[in-house]
Image (tube, rainbow, N blue to C red):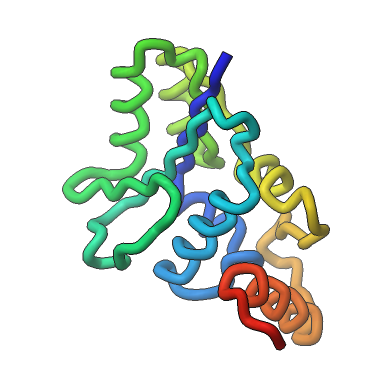
Length: 159
C-alpha cells in the first residue's frame, strides 16, 4: 500500500528552526534537497508533497521536490482540500504540528505525524539535533558545525 506524505511546509520550517536557521527561500531549497537525497517517504511508490503559503515567484523556483505554493489561500486550506478530494484519504499522512489542521484532516480520514517525528526520519543517517523547545540554545561552535555539515550536504561545497 502506497502512502502520500503531505507536509505543511511553513509549519515544518518554523518548528524546526534550529535546523532551518536561514531565510525561507534557503530553507525551502534545503528541505527540497533533503527530500530528494534522503527519501524520507521510504518506498518509491510513496509520494511526498510540500505545501507552502504564498506564490512561487516570492520564494523562488528551482525546487527538486514536489513543492506546491497556495497563492490566494492558506496551506492549511489547500491541505484539507487535497485530503478531501483524495480517492483514499486513509493513505495520506499530513506532517504538521498545527492542532486545528490535524483535527481537520483526521475528520476527513487522513493520519498525521509531528514535524519532530518526520525530521527524525529525515535526518536518520546523521545525528543532527532537532530542537524540542524554543528556549533551548546551542553554542556558536555547535551551530557552525551544523551549518558546515549542511552546507557540504546541500551545496556540495568542501570546507
